[in-house]
Image 1 (cartoon, rainbow, N blue to C red):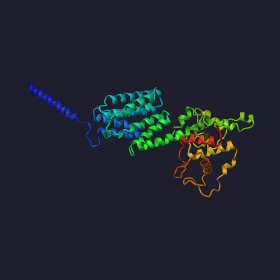
Image 2: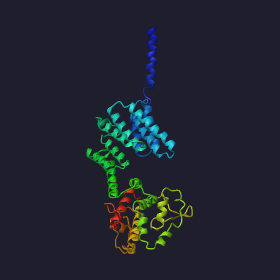
Image 3: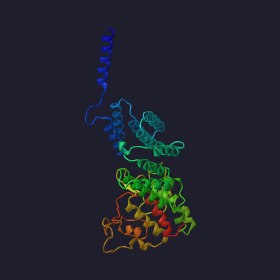
Image 4: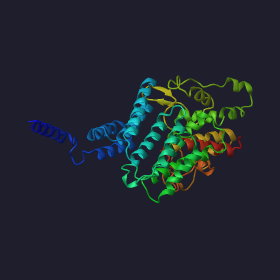
Length: 400
């Protein structure tokens, strides 16, 4: 009788296990596929989609695998950065670290530990915190010395991926030379690879930033803005005042002190009132720099500075030309290229309002066209380009 009962119990257990042996049975419904889809969603900044995919991957494998937890840690780190409320940001950061710990606990293979190390690097690069760069470097050292089979790295595919994310961390820390060295390691590791293209972009970006800041004693604002993908009108005003000291330069061109003392912005645009760059914008407005004047807004029926709108490349050409004229006093620059027979730039017509400004900016080395010859007048200017233009302008007019 006991044997029969035992047999029945074993049968029930086997049957129960068989029923839950596979939670996900579709061709594309498996942990590996969901994990890879989650990582691709992270690349595309689709954070909620990534979270869903990682959770599904864990569901498929009964929460027993490591990599989706690393993915969730990166998801919550992104949410922490995006959260404006400090308390909620702190909660998301805690969730990121909790999932990172789970990724560590469930990392059973060398490849798991390698991907956990990169997840740790990415998390701390995002959420920062005390001694964050040292923590990233510790993860990097652990990952580098881990002997992995690259064929088993589902997402990262090559060990050089860890150099790429160390480069991203150094860039975030404004350690530009170290970042460039890491991107170089990626490019030297393989002739072709998954991380070559992003590393090449990173190398070119950090190289441009390094050139832009060379020879300039930048404050924290300047270093931060050097890394911006788009520079706003407010941020450019801040750079011109804080880094170029444009107000002092232009004030020195005004011979009568009483005139200088009387100078002030005609009014304070509504969108400037409580902005972090208010003082710099109002200082710049005193000098009526063309390209950075208040603009009439049809919605509010008022003149606004449009302080958070990006500066386009054609706008910067206007601004540089006007500053050059104000400093040198040579107003002929405003019409120097009128009557030019043919534009050297395929995307800038000689009849375009900004043609003369573009010519002045490029021929004086303040801005650069593409190798193809295009000027890209409608593209936003980035922080490195803006700083490089300011540095070159200072050289051209011998201001140091």
